[in-house]
Image (cartoon, protein in one colour):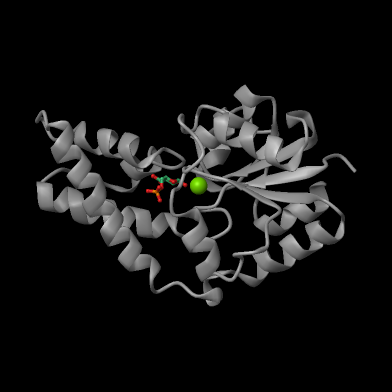
Length: 211
Ligand code: BG6
Ligand code: MG
């Protein structure tokens, strides 16, 4: 087998919480009168909550205090967590679930590498609360993607070297993080724009043929 472990990004790879992130940021941006669209949203993929806010505020033309920024980030997170309440096991696609089962049956270790501090809430909602061998997320890192920290921690948690792990990502920042950390990567969606992805996938199920 080519790899010993697979490290999955969460938002936009395992489930489509990326659209809830967009809705929640859009609501905040509209309230503040700041222009925000899907193209700007793509720059937020894989990026931490506070760094995402900084990207949105680039177009505000104002200098907000740290207290105001903290309040904006909290406001966005409350909207986002309200949206997450509608998620159930039905939000886990058959394609993702059956591919994960196939990869597990091949004996691969399966881990999460996500910048989100809501990772465990989301995994529970979609019925994967106990599925992954290890979870590395926004609660155990200080630098978010494109820094490789979240993936390096995931590799350490599963006890494997980066060269033996494949990272699966929908963010260009995530592919960059994988490269910097010495990981091979499989790109989905927007991440395929990054020139250094090891593989470009048309769908999640293609992973089963790769490894
Ligand atoms: C990443 C998302 O997975 O998590 C980003 O791609 C998001 O868009 C980041 O900003 C942080 O998420 P959270 O849930 O901690 O606000
Ligand atoms: Mg993502």
